[in-house]
Image 1: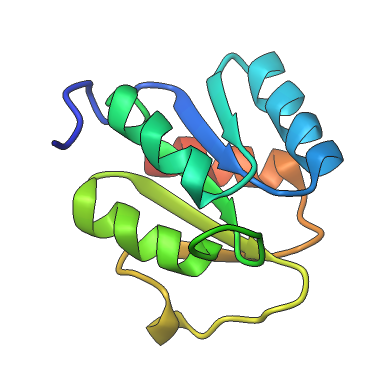
Image 2: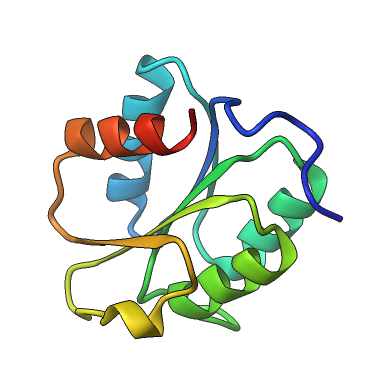
Length: 125
């Protein structure tokens, strides 16, 4: 349970059901020197997190198919993998801070991936 790699490791899981958006983010983070995992929904994301304890950052969309949406996934991750840096994004559902798990950043779509990368790198040091 929990991760065993240092907090500063550059490994991210991107959970996004829109394939083109997911692929663009995978390419962006890979080009920036990150090890990237991706999933189209929470049902794919949870086994990845269980197998890859080195994942330090999760970026998840809110609205997606499957057994849970991105907000429920974020709460699950915060409870099961507390040191994970969480970013929750949505183009349709504005979230209030009290809806998010502790220490989670909400980003409205569209967002600037370069700015996101700076935020992530600042929070994983």
